[in-house]
Length: 255
Ligand SMILES: [Cu+2]
Image (cartoon, rainbow, N blue to C red; front, side, top):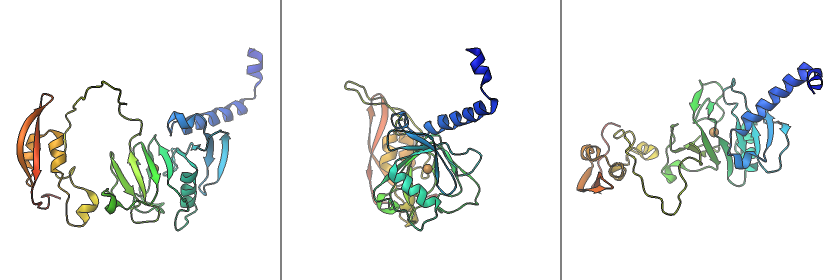
């Protein structure tokens, strides 16, 4: 037994170890229910694939290269792959005919969130996320267009490569089971900044999230919020909760 293992050439086992590590990394980029059966392939700068492990479903997972900006490990469905290969080939617009999906659950780095063809700007660190590759209109959808570390945004907004970038993993959070009780978590929100909606701000009409402030349970924040008027205050599950009435909106102050 030991003799056969020792007789294996050293280079072979090193190359094999590297390959296994690439596969391991690629498979961490997506949810296990799809990565289990996925093909694993390396992708060069032109988007060409070299298969490392054959799969049995439609997904392809790519190990990427942590030392290169934008060479992200990811899992792509067929339409997501069309979109990504079009981007890498610098086509003027993506040719996917239905929304594609890409998971980047290990996070990513890239040069820009506004220009899909930027290859020189400093790296932007991006947390775990997944993407719906379809040209959403940020303004119509009420979504932001600026890189953020939670929630969602339309990345590359206004370009043919606009897509929905959703921070975090879809598998975050708890499943509901009948009989589960509601648990309220007290969170902090920075005034104005956290409550201002990206695209609306650009129009000069800030969205005033008085309702969100009320839902946050922060009575003080609501009171400080100039455009919100407190109707009443009551207890919800042992914590104070304000309900507010929205009045004529003035632009939010400091932004
Ligand atoms: Cu991404």
